[in-house]
Amino acid sequence: MLFAFPVFVLSFIIAFIRSSLSVAYTVYCTPAASIQAHIVTYDGSDLSWSERLILAQLVTLTPGTIVVGISKERPELRIHVLDGSSQDEVKRCIDESLAKQLKGVTRC
Image (cartoon, rainbow, N blue to C red):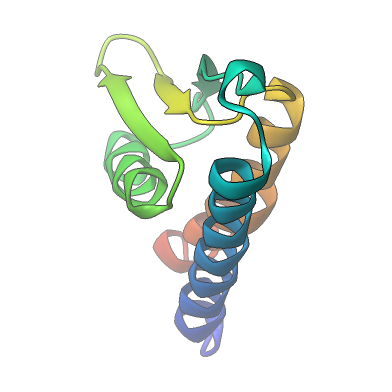
């Protein structure tokens, strides 16, 4: 419990760096015609409203992603991703690197 916040911050920094490198690779090494930007729907039903709000901010701060839709009525985030070739991979990364640690901090 004592280390939940530092682990959360470190997880975000790692996700930020990985995403920055991925965006740099996509921009410099991928032909523009093959970039597949998509809207990904992330299920946030296991998160409270405030946790979804914080997660939306974290996702928006991560390069290559921006939250374009969030609602109190529907527990989901609509996320625009620069390289959406693997939508399941995007959801898995959000689950493992951000949502899991966020719940560790907010549910102490």
